[in-house]
Image 1 (tube, rainbow, N blue to C red):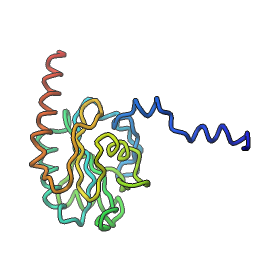
Image 2: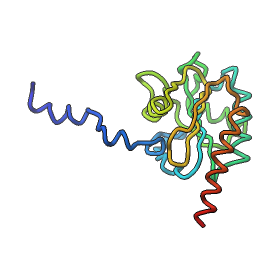
Image 3: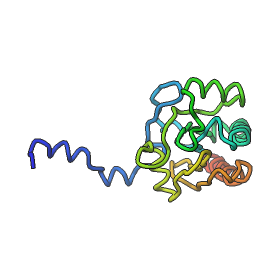
Length: 186
């Protein structure tokens, strides 16, 4: 063993104590316009994290319902956080700029969008690795949905066959709890 490599190898090992304390809002990711964003800015709110695709059979129904949910509940207590992904059926082939243009023109999307990323497997971004490990459910297609509580912990996860309308009661319950908690603190 080369003694000079030991410090480098120690840096590459995960720090168990740090990993244990992580939650979804502890990550930093690049948004669709290329800016590094700390998810900490969403702490204290409920989030619905979704891996999206522009050319999927689920695209139209999901984007319409996600935008409706964002318009009705956001942005003070709730946000949809969308992550374009080309892993499943190559159904998100465009650049970040093309994706953003498409969703704004087609669906008037007003919720935060992030840079195109991998959400499953060994190449998945760290935030989605956290989501998969915490929920025990890894995306295997477009439009997986993770409900995140105000504390950054995963509350529930659903596959693409579960419509936004079907998960809406769970989202509403988390938002209701958050509003009641904030009223109690006043």
